[in-house]
View 1 (cartoon, rainbow, N blue to C red):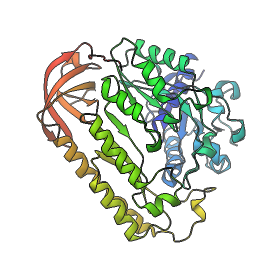
View 2: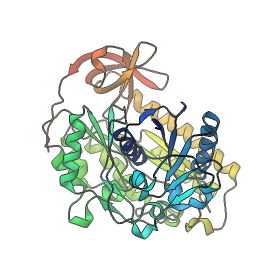
View 3: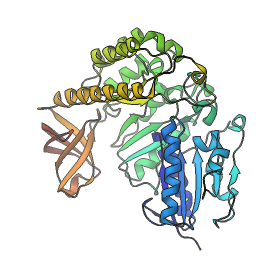
View 4: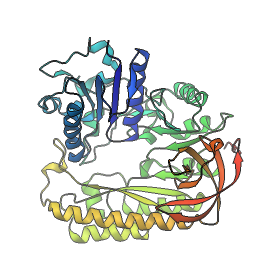
Length: 442
């Protein structure tokens, strides 16, 4: 009987939570989970389709797996599998392709894991993605921080994005189920839980609730934890959420708020639901309300029609904002999107140059933000020991911190006085452990 499976995730935190849930299905059926770099009987690759590079990486990973074990049974699932299963079927060695619905029904679809000559495609039409399929960190996941999927799908029609076609319309997990699963993760020992979804702040609209109401209930749980939101659209980051984050230490003082472009012209072409002036006002308001707030920003360079002047507007716009870091994406043409038909494509070399400029800016922003932490005493949730006698963890505002290893720090909160910045992380000394955070509810 086959006994080992290796799991690999491409893309977002939502994908990680789903991979963990699928991995738990293998554990429940007697499989051992091994590292993806090790030889396994079954390999499962959960894919992304946001960029062409993600799809290219999928093909590279399959080839690498076959070099490790030519007899391995290879399953490809995720957004790429939903959108272009026939393309994946042409990759030598892929045995099964499971769509967005089918990935949670793996063991009812696949009778065995014996390698065959042809790929089997199991992908339902996107119209059938109506039910919410839950996912969270499980025994298959060894992270200190847990992922909890509370929302899926998207009703937005951004011109560059394929996600609505890969994941369907927006839908959410019932509040009582979120609270139940949240508590289950706390029972397993997780101290930070990341709420994930495609459009997390769109949570609950189909059953007359919203993200603020859900957060208000979560912070009432009398346990030792903190909540992080994976990403939140600027038009949905309400004053209520900001005020709750300012009043409750259980909500991380960190938001990841996609921008995509600082050029008003490009932002309109992207069909985003806010203006640059609205975005700027939001960032400054959030910084005023919440102490030491960390803010991450998504931005796309090389979108069709983005002139040098448009890019410079984005660069200058980001320079002026009090943000902490950037996630920079190079635009890539995605089939079946509005943007793929637009004229004035940006030269690939120019796209890469602009990407590099913003990545350098991101490092400057991160260094400035980390520098502002020097001399402060900050709570850090530490993860696992490193080989060099140190241990790393993250603050609530997503600053990476390193200190001398001590076993009682693992998966625990400790107050650290930040003294310096070394190798792109803050260093400091522990000045006190925290058995529990002062868990103020709103």
